[in-house]
Image 1 (tube, rainbow, N blue to C red):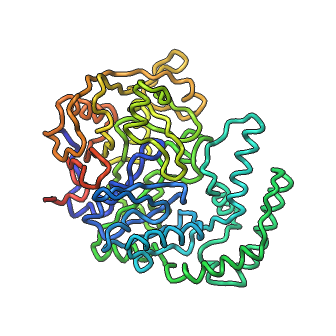
Image 2 (image 1 turned 60 degrees about the horizontal axis):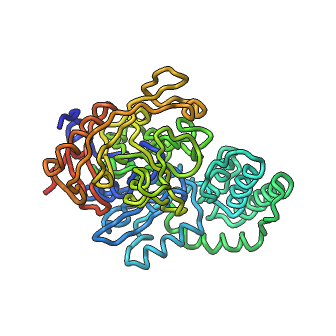
Image 3 (image 1 turned 30 degrees about the vertical axis):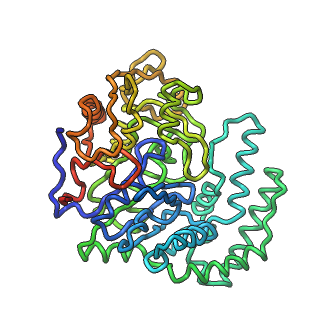
Length: 452
């Protein structure tokens, strides 16, 4: 398979892993797989609205805030300043991981600059979605976790941050102001009966602070030290490029920047530390929540291709359990992701879900108001009007599940992947053929290291 020449091994020590679709591409598995030769994994944006599911030796573990590197005991895990942190959820997730025998607190480092997600953010998030629905507007399709309101407080310069947990008096004053402000909005703007009581929340934050304080760190400094020592770092993105607040299908997007460039700003390091950008995409396309989706198929009717993708792919959200909308691979949308992220290489996941289909289609562009378009438009209203133009490929009857060698794939599967590579203009580095970490075909190792 033809591939673009990667930088020399001495240059590639740090990799940014980003989703190139609407999230749920399988980033967690690939981060876990790559940490075989890394010393650290960093989450740099989003919150616990992201879910990374890992399957290791048949055992499934779902992560939301804790970086995927936690599954390997020797790997350090960092939560960068670009992440919004729900302290209650964080400690619950840590305890759950400790319950299955993982050491977490000794190697998890949380930036003091992370904004906190608090109960009033959750109440606001849900009240807004209810208001949109009652008013006849389209719901954004948020997870209701308080992510958006927490980022709003950050931008408005009134957020409580992890560092405030070190200072009880400062925490008390800032929290009281924030509670009063958001309670007023809940009552007067949204007519919500939910009101957040200050005293119990303050007392609970003091309890959580005692547990979180030992994990607080100057993440940017620690990563710079690791870089100088010659360590390898993985920057783990959440959500997907097409949900980016600036570059996605606005307003049906998440509340943070989830593209590769954010890895620097969201971790406290310089962009010179981002050596290689690995984009993750499914061999088809899915989307959770509202928003335009040009290649969407009927995924609810039994016997349809869309239903095959949804059922064989087990397409339900890791965080919410909501069914994922399913459709053909959209190469025109991937072109946009290649540009935004500056992809060095691509990983195709869930190839095995296409097993048994008579034919497979790839969207190569659209007709927009009768005019041909070869890349995803920037305006969500235009995207909603796009009619996909497809290229059709023969399917394959052999199973690809668990295949670990390129030459063991059916010829039609190889032809499909090679054509996708041509259409999007980025080389395929890896192919995932199943949920387990070992179900992976390596074509070009981003770290330029030989594996056995």
